[in-house]
Length: 301
Length: 124
Image (cartoon, rainbow over all chains, first blue to last red; front, side):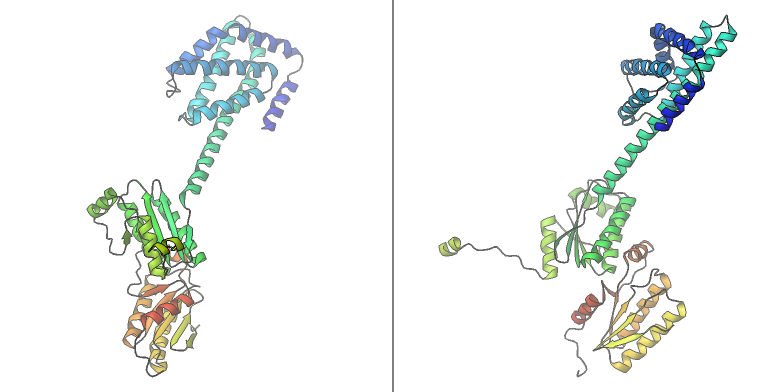
C-alpha cells in the first residue's frame, strides 16, 4: 500500500503553500464541529440502515474513531494511520457479516456530511468555497478509497484463510498398516468435499498400494441422499482401483436415514466402529494381531 | 495399432497404452478370444494404465471380453485404472461388474491366482 501513501504525498505536493492555511483552517473547523457532525453522521448511518449487525453504541464509538482518524488523515495527508485503523476495524467487522457496500456507504456518507458542513460554512463566499473543496475533495476521495480497499483486502484474507483451513481439515488419509489405509471424516460432508475426498483417497490408494481402506464417519453428524450416493460412489471407485472399502462409525441416526432413503447399500461393507473396521481390514489382509503374553502371566497360568 | 498381447505362463497380458478407437478394442476382443483357446490360457490381465477416458463403449467392450473369455475358460482382471478415470466412471455409472479389478499388474496376477485356485490346469 506504499503506492497509496505515495499518491497522497503527490496530492499534497501538487497543492502548494497557499492551501496549507486553508487546510489548517478546514481541519480546525471540523475539529470544532466534531460533536455535531459526528452525531449527524451516526444518525445518517442508522437512517440508511447500514451496519445493522452492530448496536447503536458500538456504531457510535466506531464513528468517533473513524471521524478522528479521518480528520487526522486530512490534516497530515498521510493515510497510513487510517489504513491501519481501517484494517483493524475490518478484521472486527468482517467476521460479523458486514458487507462491502455498507463500509463504502458509511465512508461516503461521512464525506457528504463533511462536504455539506463546509458548504454551509462558506455559503457567503463561493470563491473561497471552491478553493476549500479543491483541497478537501481529493483527500476525501483518497481516504474513501483507502478504507474501502482495506476492507475488501481483509475480507479476501479471511476467505483465503478459511479456504486453507477447510482444505487442511478435510482429508487426512493415513496408513496404519502395510496396504491398509484409514480415512477419518469429520464435519459436514457436501458434494464438493466428498469429491475431493474421493480423489485424494484414490491417489493415496495408488501411492501406498493399498488393498483395504477403512472410511470412518463417526465424526459426520448427518447425511443426506446426495452424500450417501457419494459414499457409494467412493466405495465403487475404490473397488475399481482394486481396493475394498469398509465404512465404519455409522451412528444409529445415519443408519436409519440411509435405510429410509432407500440407498442401495449392497455394495457397501460396514462395521460398527473404527476398531472393528481395522480388525476386519487386518483379517482381509491376513494379519493376525495377538497379545504378547508376559512370562509372569504365563507362569501363573 | 494392434494391442500387443503377451503370454506369461498360464496368463495373457494385454497392455493398453493410449486411448483406444472402437475398432482397436474390437480387434483386442477377437485376438484375446482367439488366443485364450489357442494358448489354453487360464487368466487375462488387461492393463488400462495408459487410458485416460473409459467411456460406455470401452466399459461394455471390456465386460464383453471378460464374459466371452470366461466361456472359453479364462478369468479377466482389469488393472491400472487411473484415479480420475475411476471417479468419472462411478459418476457416469459405468460398471465393470462382474469383472475383477486390481491396482496393477502384480495385484492382478494375485487375483487371478486366487480366482483360479483349484481349477484344473490342463495338465500344465
